[in-house]
Structure formats: C-alpha cells, structure tokens
Image (tube, rainbow, N blue to C red; front, side, top):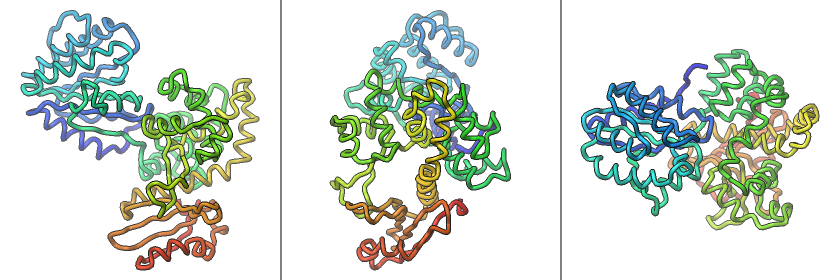
Amino acid sequence: MKFYDRKREIEILQEIEELSSEYAQMTMMVGRRRIGKTTLLKNAFVKTPVLYFFVGRKNEVLLCEEFVNEVEIKLHETLGQFTSFSQLFKVIMQLSKRLNFTLIIDEFQEFRNLNPSVFSDMQNIWDSIKEESKINLVLCGSIYSMMKQIFENAKEPLYGRVTSRIHLKPFDMSTLKEILHDYHPRYTSEDLLAFYMITGGVAKYIEQLVVRKAFTKDKILKTVLSEGSYFLEEGRDVLIEEFGRDYTNYFSVLSLIASSKTSRGDIESTLNMPVGGYLDKLENEYNLIRRTRPFMAKEGSRNNKYKIEDNFLRFWFRFVYKYRSAVEIGNLDYVREIVERDYETFSGNVLEKYFRVCLAESKEYSDVQGYWDRKGENEIDIVAVNDFEKRMLIGEVKRNEARINLHILENKAVAIARQYGDYQIEYRGFSLKDM
C-alpha cells in the first residue's frame, strides 16, 4: 500500500529536523499500535542521516550490537562493542556535537522492562551534552500509559526534557475516502461505513483489507470474521500488555461499554463491583474511552456516557470478545449471524460518529456534541456550535433517509433553542446517502 497523507505531521517533523541543525531536539511521539508511526518517521526526514533503533524484547547486549551496526552503516563511524545502551547513547551524543543526524528509538517504553536505569542515564547525558549537540532525537512509543508516565510524571527523570510532542491519530475522513476510492472506485456508502467501522482510519487495518481486496461491506465482514483472521486476536494483542494481569476486569468494562452499557451505574450493577478506578484509568491513562456529557450540561454533571474511542476495538469487544466461546471453538458462522442481526443498530451508531467527526474536521464549529436528557426521552445525535458566528447545527442521523423527521427533531431541541435564542439554528438530517 502506498504512503498516504500525514502532510501536517511531516511538516512538523521536518521543521524539527531543521531546528536540530543548530539546537538539539527531543521529540516524543505516541500513537496506538498499528497507527503507522514507524512508516511516518521513515518517510519524514530528508536532510539528515536517519538511525532507527527498535527496542525489542531481547538482551541489552544484543540490542546494543544491532544499534552499533546501524550507527556504523549510516554514519560511517567505527564504535566498537558496548554492553549497555547508556554507554552507547553517550557516544552517540558525543558524535552529535560534530554531526547533525536523526535518531529514532521505536517502542522506547520497552526500556522500562529491559533496564529502567536507562531513563535516568539518558537524562544525565542529555543535560550535560545537549547545548553542544545537533541531534534530532525522536522517542516513539505505542503503550500510551507508559509513555505518559515516562514523559509527563514530574517524578520521572525525562520529565520536562522533550522539546516537541506528537500524538499520532488515525487517518481523517478525506484520506479514508481517498484510499477506498483508489482501490474500489465504485464503492457505496454501505462499503465506506463498513470500511470506517472496522479500520477507524488505522493504517495497519486498512492495509490488511487492501491486501485481501476486501472493499465491500460483505467482503470486509467476511475477512474480519474468518478462520485464521488477523483481526480475531487483535484486541487482545493490542491491549493485554497495557493492562497486565488485571486485564480481565478492564476487558469486562470495555465489553459492556461496547454493548451500550454506557453509564457507570449500568456497568457497576452488571458486574456487581465498583468500576470508578477502571473507568478513570481507561480514560486518563490508557486513552481508550471518553466520558461524554450532553450539550449544555455543567462540568460536574453525572449524566455522563462512556464511549470507546477506537472503532475497531469497539467492534471487537461487541462481537468478538463477547462471543469468544464461539470464536474459540471455530463457530464463526454463529458470530457472523449475530453481527448480521445487530448490524443496522451497531453501524447506525458508527454512522453518527462518522458525521460528528466530519463536522469537527470541517473546522466550521467550535464544539460538536450530542444531547440527551436525564429521562432518556429526548436524544439528539448532533449539536454543532460556532460561538463566534452565533450559529448552530442540530442534526439527526439515520441509516435510511426516509426515517428522518425534522419536525420531531425541532420538538426535541426546544430546550436548546430556548437557551440559544440569539443563535441561527439549522436543523438537518444525515443518512447513508450523505456520506
């Protein structure tokens, strides 16, 4: 698959590369696994030699051997042998006094398992040499909680050292459409919705579908839910390292959220246990869920809903993890029947997210939310506001255009219209055909 988009990220990285010719730069890049961090970094830098170190789970001496080989090939310098990364890093920093180059350290958080003293050693070396250095150091990781701990915890040695931060997000909607059009020009809205529902704009998932020529709704679902599918174990593979031994409770919470148990009360009553700590970590440490409150609700409102941010993980917890017994005995026909039965409702929620994201990406609005009252009687899919221009879009999303009723929507929005009487309000329906 060819390299798509990332123009803004490349611009930022190349600006940092330019700065490194005079001042040492330390960039922290984080992004979920499979998002395309490594591919981006290998395509971004054009003015400096690029050293790429991958911190695999192996002996530190063996890693140093690999890293030394990379330095000697790319910089044409003879280094000798090293038994610790800290020793090697000091020599690399010394080299950067006279050479301007980029050093990418991928899966940087793995040093916590390999040799945690690396972080304090790097801090001391960085602080002592950075003023004379011309290094463009990029520290890249995919375990969000660990990267956040390493760089944002004031008690950690590398706190306050980074000069730039990049949080790599999935491809935006226009790029997703471009990719699907390149490989399947006659795609339908149903195809695009399924493509978005499974990949969420994550590069590796897109690549998996491209390789298998899975571009229609039916082919996409068949590819995901087939024997030996890459996707069947993907949720577990991506998250189990994040959660560690306590993963079963986290998985249970995520499975309930994916199955529309979106309030803390619903989750606790189902599991018969307090989940406040799990929800807090899932939102603030792991960046996997988002607590949403209805439009106009005050900061301390308890009328909250939790949503899984990642499209694929939401699908995986709703259909693969929930029915893992059937998956484990190879009865994927059973799982496919459940997906088919629930597809309209599940994909309808994805369609709502699709249009909210599109409105946010349009840059026309200062806020895009939903609205619901405490009784659950009035629920509005989209409330998009432009406070500067004093205008608002209130939207209803249905798969089938014929089911959209703007008169009912206006009645649901009476409280909002009353509160925002001086705003120009547009009521609009969104359906599959508007994708």
